[in-house]
Image (cartoon, rainbow, N blue to C red; front, side, top):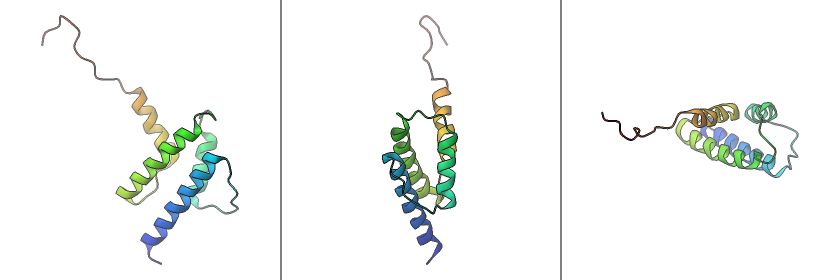
Length: 101
């Protein structure tokens, strides 16, 4: 098996785990390093249970996009940091009325 095939299997397994977490039916006994990191990040995060499924769906799309570009899995903690930075970034405002440049 080539490295690319192994990475695709990891992505498929990872995606399946995210889906299992969303539905609340994780029945595995063995996990990859990336899957354990996801579970630890999820446990450490301050996500409300009610918002978890939506956040995990967006995270899974981001992981798939990131994997397509860089062939690596995006940690949940990095995804959540990016989301917080986007929310905290000041929006570009138009000049106030009456101001001239």
